[in-house]
Length: 221
Image (cartoon, rainbow, N blue to C red; front, top):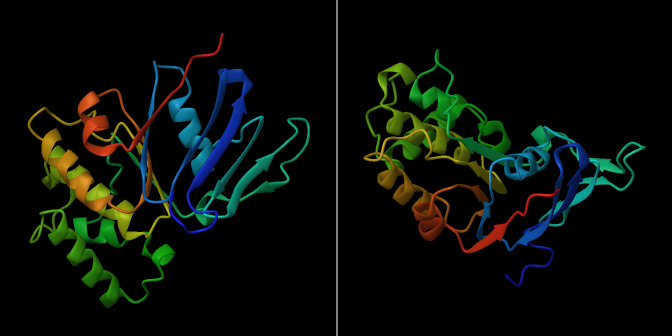
């Protein structure tokens, strides 16, 4: 645990309808892998943290900021921070790039949260990210002009360029072919350094390469 007070993430949630009950913590700058069978609540947990699903009961705190506090399922939450105010980046197996935007414009999208203002400054930062993810010179290409691995690289850059305090990875390599996955895994190992991350994956290679700790979700009956 870092010496920074209240640093990292603490989570304790229950979603009765989906039979989800999880409680864990992630120190600042570490990667926690959530593992368990399909339907055990991995993606449900990520959705609650992202602000897309309200748990019946639960609380989550990130670096001292309460994301939500829901002590009573029959009443409104004591605290519910809207998704866009949480400083959370979400990356799934589908890159979800805007098809009408170029790679550089996709990365620029969302930089407001990182306090990068002005188109020139944003473009410069986006170009830096393109270089960092190994796609320098690809800035003008649209998503349909990129391979699956290249599009996922741009998606990674877009998430991280927004300056997230927490990164949620939901099977980020599942849609890639076996040749592209190792390179993206190596890229994630590099760019996620010193960030607080939750990783959902079924692949042992992802856990070995990326995770500091593993939390096993046991399905509720």
